[in-house]
Length: 327
Ligand code: ASP
Image (cartoon, protein in one colour):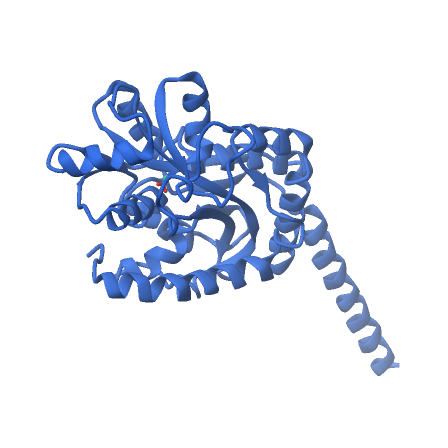
């Protein structure tokens, strides 16, 4: 009898704990989630994050608020998330810089491959080579000649070492074998403000930040870095068409959570991301900005993990052979 009672007790306990586990899984999220963007408000990473966060919020039934933690090419924001409570209420939306900074920064405050859980890939955005409106050259060939002739006075904006704009700017300088003066910002949102104001000359940045300005004629566009022209910018040639055949770069974005975030929360976030990437409003806004959402099979933890590992391995030898580090 005693044994029977004890068994009953155990069964009740096991049932109660099962109920509470499934209740937790079902009730997550119970409050607002913070999505850290490691660059300034108004820039391209911020734009992608806000669009996706708004749509994910609807699916999750809780608001995702975006917090901009810019600085050090995205590593400050990533570090903030790595050290946050792994409770499912803090996530990070970062781009390719997550991979390049793993080698560029030899004293990073977090271990890139081991400090995060993976939620999924979001999108891959082409870069555009742009300049202030009144810069004289009218095409990429002319820009290259101009830059070479004025190399001590031409300034190139970027969002700090490890940022996509930094990477693209370095690729441009290396392709034309001409080092230029760089001006770092906490994000290319404020850099765009200075480009519009004529305080800085050129920038290589995501189409998600430049398309509207290019179409509005408030900046000049010389090239896109994709293999083909963008449907939304049919008049802007590819870099390859304009004489830089090797110059191709796409900036991928992913959502991460701190290591140790419960699996059910990661899974729920991943599902919400997949729903957001099929949201007609997100699809339409992405198209207007020159990009497309990642496929459902890529908006998964496994796909993001594989992408990050592959990209760290791809960029490591490139950065090491250039011998240029952030520290
Ligand atoms: N476009 C920036 C970069 O260069 C980041 C940003 O401001 O969103 O990485």
